[in-house]
Image (cartoon, rainbow, N blue to C red; front, side, top):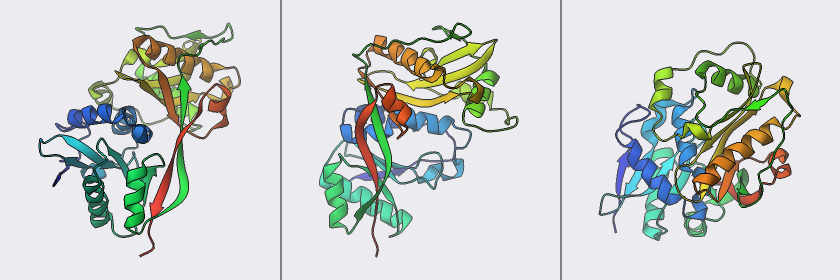
Length: 289
């Protein structure tokens, strides 16, 4: 079978192709070797203020004879963080086409990021002279069948479902929570309104004195898996269990909608302490010639 290759058409974040990619990523979730690139990761990337918009046209879709996306190669937010592979078919011809196209686009020194569970793709890479190098990411998983109980000090409250977040406070908790100093440049509110698949009820905030002190973003619509991104606590409010509370509350809401697990791309010991376990690893693949 020959596969049609389609390029992301322009540098607009949410263009007319976006929802087709979203649907593909929803289906790709069902294959465990794709868990490193949940649809929520792609949507967070497109909403992120640091997105390298000029490189959006480097995203490639691979379509079958029915014009259905069966493969995707992409970067994540920063173009230096590339190339990720996601595919719903493990047809060797498809995977060879994806690898060959990336080599043509990126050159022989391309760094490919592949889940270790993606055994067919790993074999294709070996046959093409690539070698597995350093681990570049871990995917951790939380079983949502377990109790999700938390406590927070009396000075704090959890945002309820239906909470209308203040966009500036939302931006500040992320800015401060990632240890940035000063006052950030204000987000584009119109861009935030255009994010197409986010469920605002799954965003949780821990609040004190009308200040957002901790936050968990959670991405889920259907299927088994919810995606955690981002998680932050403002420095002066740390070590009080607020991040755990925000995660557990968000996960409990996703569980009520049908999610069976939550994943996060991280190696932080914090996640292991609150019940996450290692699910898979992503490695860089390179070749010397």
